[in-house]
Length: 630
Image (cartoon, rainbow, N blue to C red):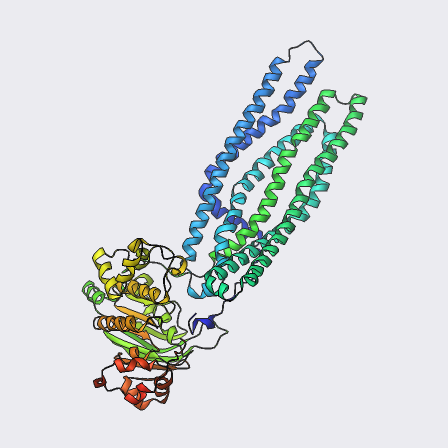
């Protein structure tokens, strides 16, 4: 982590707050709306299957009535068979339609979330654990599947079937219906009290899953360090603790869901016993026939399905509400505006001016820039001002925490200034379309990240349109040609997770080659040669010097060999620019720079410099090996 980013904090957004019911339904409908007609078809098929089920008790009643006479029952038996087979087939098709649509809902939600998360502003990412963000895309969207399709259909079909069943039962015998409804209402009230507990437990379980992802990402992100430190057991314990927390809340959710489901069975069984007792008495008194009691009992058992669907819809809604709250929270995180490169050229001037600007080196200026990472944190920059005309090399030096790396973050608009202006080509970076601004810049970060994949993919990451000739040229310039020859599959060799198959110096050269292949007008190098050996550092230093003849190069440097090559040096201290000049001028005029040159720069590289440049030989030779942190 860079010197300045560490001040931005690394916490999360905190516990997920449950959304109001109206807002939850609005969010659910947004995911459901594109698929509403397909869901309607699935609901219709489910409802048709339910109707065939409703006809079965009526057919059974007719069958019982015919048992006492001489009429044939073959037709009734065939009808019952057809109803059972047709109802099962239709409901199966409806279930497939709904499951397929549910997967489409999850796919759409994941596409939307991934698209937003890769456009998140840097401060948002720094406030949220990566594992938590990943769990929202994976596990939370999975929970969304049931609530946006099955829950809706279960509520609609279950509700309609429940009403139809109640009506038919009422037509048969209102007294027995009253007994049934009384039992269901009594037990249903207890179920309603359980539902919020399911939602709370599910939300806590999902947060714990995010913690698991975060802990694993932390361990795998520094796997060698974990092993070298003998920390496997400690890291394993942290993951297991999060897994235990997820298990605890998952079990709690399962417990309350079991209570809800068992309540359905209890309601039906109690209703059956009550109806059997009271119905038997009514049959004995002649109030109803035996066939009516049989049909009523069949309707009662059939009532299990719509009641179960309603309970299922309620539990799925509670689970989905917890997931949707986390998804909505992710959707509300601040993102960068998007736009194609050159989208804002009309604002910059005439077309001829734009074409000229596209090939000329960029100029950079800071005007009284003030910046802090968050409102509650102290300022990192206190009125920083400097100008860098292009081309040429400008080095930024200063003690750790001076705000050097933050300069690059503000130029790239990873962060927005709190006051003042950052200008590129005389234009406030806030008025540039981001894609256009960043298309002008090549940026090599301090830790030179390499992505999992092949070496070719990494090199072309910032310039996918580059030709094979351009790629071959940059391999030679970055001293990567020998590495490519050693690799088993040349450029198509895998580099491992975060470039684990490459050395630190090789990763740094890959990052530099990637930036050069972009052919930027402005090149930002954040201590880009810190992990290189002397031979490769000297070679790449010459490459940077060559590039700086045509491109504006800004470099955060801690090696004297790099600093003395610069056309100008900006000395920063405590968030301010204290001096600007050449190496010779600053050694003579600025005590802080003189101290840095004598104690912190790697002055052992100084003898490689030409003495005609006018450096103070005494200062160069007095240097020692320690390297300042960025």
